[in-house]
Length: 214
Image (cartoon, rainbow, N blue to C red):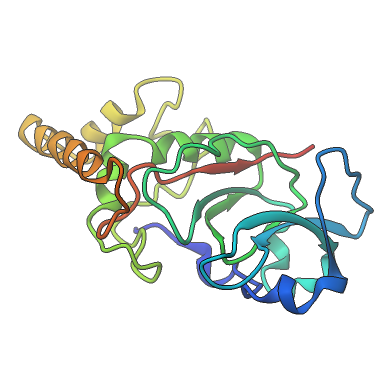
């Protein structure tokens, strides 16, 4: 089974939302305390190339779709610059966080452990390679990535305390020749993107942010 990609259900706000609705948001500050019906919203501050993804506070009722994911644990990627994202890895945010179109959720989970395990899964050479099997458009992102479905510690397939990459190679029958090809592909993708935007292929570092509870 291929990876179920949540972008179609968890991109509720257009990039022009903040510009058109300044009365419905306020900038988030690190020491802000949210009301019971408020959420942290990560979306662009303005439309176009000048826009930057920033945190805002808004009422939960501004979200019309994907509400069921608001309080879930999320592993997400940037929708605009998905290549080589490392600066936000393991950012700590509230589970009341919602992502605008600047970020999209690969999967959501009921527990922190499942989210952390999936994050580790996405960082393996094998899974990074499968992301590269399709082009960089969001419509095809992750469609060639195998989904193990169960990312709990007692899944019975992968021991996340061990070498996850080696276990995946064994699970999918990836021989040494193919492993070398994967390594060369990842190394080549990394070299091509040093200092330059990626023009094709999926992200080298796929899961860039984990959203944690307070």
